[in-house]
Image 1 (cartoon, rainbow, N blue to C red):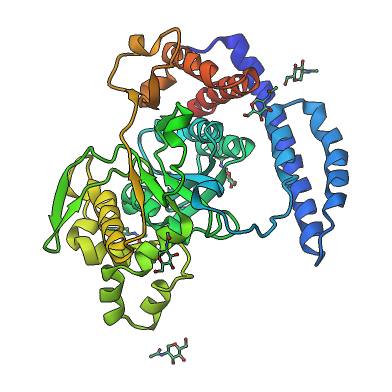
Image 2 (cartoon, rainbow, N blue to C red; image 1 turned 45 degrees about the vertical axis):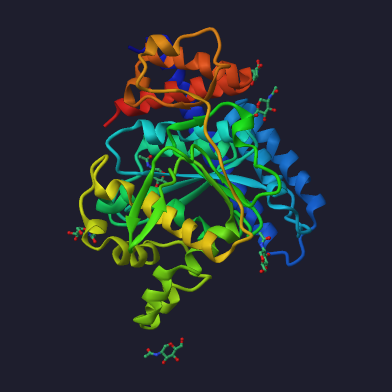
Length: 403
Ligand SMILES: *[C@@H]1O[C@H](CO)[C@@H](O)[C@H](O)[C@H]1NC(C)=O
Ligand SMILES: *[C@@H]1O[C@H](CO)[C@@H](O)[C@H](O)[C@H]1NC(C)=O
Ligand SMILES: *[C@@H]1O[C@H](CO)[C@@H](O)[C@H](O)[C@H]1NC(C)=O
Ligand SMILES: *[C@@H]1O[C@H](CO)[C@@H](O)[C@H](O)[C@H]1NC(C)=O
Ligand SMILES: *[C@@H]1O[C@H](CO)[C@@H](O)[C@H](O)[C@H]1NC(C)=O
Ligand SMILES: *[C@@H]1O[C@H](CO)[C@@H](O)[C@H](O)[C@H]1NC(C)=O
């Protein structure tokens, strides 16, 4: 499977990378310490630190570490004037369980994150699971997380019991309005995504100006009934709203009013507008709306599987009814390069006909399939990034071999 020369090279590179990474971590700590210990930061003094640290990282000539350094040069955030929603920053959020038996979901995260950058979005990746469990961050997970940092993605760790990790990795997106301000601000836009759903055609993700958001593939899923009302079922795939709208949808909901009516002190805190994104808060809503189903084991396609989009569709519907001037554009979607097609179908001269790609599961880690997949990567990214992802794949296969 693995060429011995390449893998020897790989482990040498991997040792070097580890060393560089440790040195960089220490440097970052020092830089953060210096910055945070100064009340007023003089940002012109930062490049000096960075250029002096670059001399260390260049010894290893490794694109991963160089990229991490460049990230620290991000300028201080300036309060922006109020803009129409479509002109604010855009973020794509997607979650994945750290306990999933399918590796592909976490494997794809850096690639999906950079795909979002390509179409004008920053990526927020939420890792969901029990971080208190010993050795839960495997070498493979660490590798994915390090590459995510190298492509500039935001990482959020969401603590919950292992048995809830898969459903929470989906439901967490509905509560994007409670993400920390240092990642995404109220006026910014947040679009829901999936780690195995890759955006291809830029125009599919461009906001409709003059509206407050959009739902992608909005006419896919018919309607459903709950609480004696008819709701249109929106797919979670991509829903694009401002952060403040995501939060208002929850804050003004009938569900919250019902929870508040019987809330003790602690519950009131969990229901407040500045509550942090947490398992406890989400669980209040989940149990109210879905009763036992919320706590049940979940399999693909069963009642629990669609909790996130049922809840989200209800919240959006009720919010729209309250705010008659709120406008949501409902779109279709382009042709999809789907994982149901054989790998032969993925092997093609160009990908121009497709709007997005629904990525393969773990079979993508087979060398021949990965090679075909790199054709798609080449059509999207420059050589530096294709090389970065090839390195990532090779290291992923090597660290996966060890116990
Ligand atoms: C450093 O990396 C660049 C590409 O990232 C490559 O072109 C160059 O040859 C490398 N230099 C050395 C000394 O390995
Ligand atoms: C993964 O990274 C964490 C810290 O980021 C570290 O504590 C842990 O030992 C790493 N796991 C492995 C298997 O290297
Ligand atoms: C996780 O959830 C399961 C089922 O609800 C429960 O049996 C178990 O005790 C929980 N574990 C922890 C550490 O809370
Ligand atoms: C509720 O919290 C407030 C402060 O946040 C405290 O003063 C009050 O005593 C608490 N009430 C109960 C019943 O715990
Ligand atoms: C809708 O109208 C309310 C006042 O009724 C206003 O506060 C709000 O900003 C408006 N929203 C939009 C999206 O125009
Ligand atoms: C390659 O793409 C990355 C990510 O979009 C970008 O940061 C980098 O500047 C590009 N490199 C070249 C040589 O164009």
